[in-house]
Every structure is written in structure tokens, then in C-alpha cells.
Image 1 (cartoon, rainbow, N blue to C red):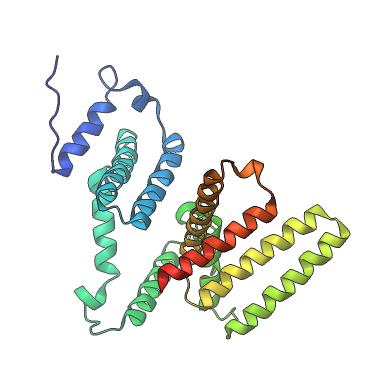
Image 2 (spheres, rainbow, N blue to C red; image 1 turned 45 degrees about the vertical axis):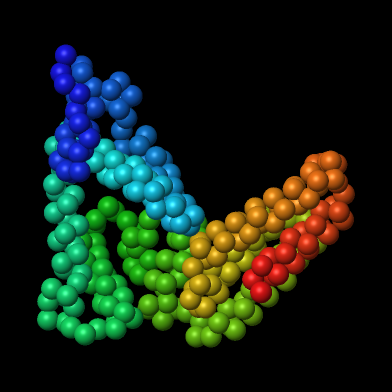
Length: 275
């Protein structure tokens, strides 16, 4: 029976541990059964858990979640190594090469750039890289090519709009986007009157897309804004539940008018706390 490995701060220890888990005969049956496709959902989930720890300001949890996310990278790299495609070292080489290449203002001749100029330079280099490898991943070509389909819808909408904006297909004033939002509201109302469910769904999609566009024009991250709205809703609804519990009942036993009144009280409490 082999000695159990010890925890280590060395990345090589994690790579070796993953190799042991994937070794036929002596490894973990569950780990051995996995593929890129079955692990991909866990990779996405771990990225969200990293974001959640950041949103909660929990650095201890962030440390653990970053470890879980790192494990996903090591897991995918190990499966690729088993197929003779690449290994973890190749992953590290690729990202360090990319960072050096995309930071000429640090490692090359371009110097003293503003953050906005750095962002523009980064995007310019990315575009040059895509043009140099048009067949990479067999993704769609053109200005919108390479935006991953697996991105959350809000994030993908933001990227698509930004890509289109870089080639001139964009509003020049946030008020024009707001006018588009009003237009989408009117079209939803028309679809409601027609009781056309397909049209309703399409128009709601258009409205959400326009809302993301407005957020982009106002330099607001739509994902962050929606996360904050979710947290606000949870906080205020918890206030309603506590207030109803003090009255000896739950939400299902209260009227909508009662809960709406308590919602207003929750909002008032938050305003008082900010004073």
C-alpha cells in the first residue's frame, strides 16, 4: 500500500495528485470515468462560486474556491495529457506567452499608456491573433467571431455589443439606447394584446438585450448590477418573512397588500441605515 500524499504549496504536487487519481487500477473510479464534457459544468460552477465568494467579501472562502477552480484546470490538463494533446506545463506556457505578447506596454516598446489605451491595445492584439488563426476552433468569422456560446447570456450580450461597437455599429448616446428600450416596451405591450407567446418571448429577449446595451453605455456591469438586485430582493424579502414571523404567520398566510407594505418598510429601513 503506497504512502498517502501530503498537502503541498507546490503546483507540481497538485499535478501529481491528479495523475494519481486518474491512474487506472489504483486511481479514483469516479475521476477515471470523467471526460471534458462531464467536467465542464463543474468548471463553470466553480467559477461562479469564486465570484460569489468575492461578492460576499469572504477571503477565506475565496482561497478555497480558487483552489477548486485550479483543480478544474489541472483536471482538464491531465485528461488532455492522457490523449497526447497537451499537459499542464503547456497550459502555463500558453498563458505566459499570451500575457507577454499582450503587454507590450510592460515588456515591449509601448510605454506610459492610460488604462483605456491599454484596454484598446489588448483588444487590438486579440483581433490580430484571431485574424492570424481564422480556423481556430472553427468559430464564426467576422467581428463577432470567437465569442463563446457557453457564456452566460448577459455576459455574451455584452461582448457581442462591444465587438459590434468596435467596428462602428453602435449608438453614440445612451439616450438613444433608452429610446430603444421604450420602443421594446411598446412592442411587448402589442404582443401581450395579441396574446402571442412566441412574440412575447422574442420581445422580452430584445428588451433584455437593450438593457444590457444601456448598462454598457453607462459603464455599468450588467451581471454585477443584477447580482446586486438579487441580493437586495433577498434582503428585503427576508425582512418581510421576519416581520410576518413576529406576527405569528408566514408569507402564504399574508395578503399581497400586507407584504407590499412590509416591502416598503424594508426599503425605508435601508434608507435610514444609509443616513
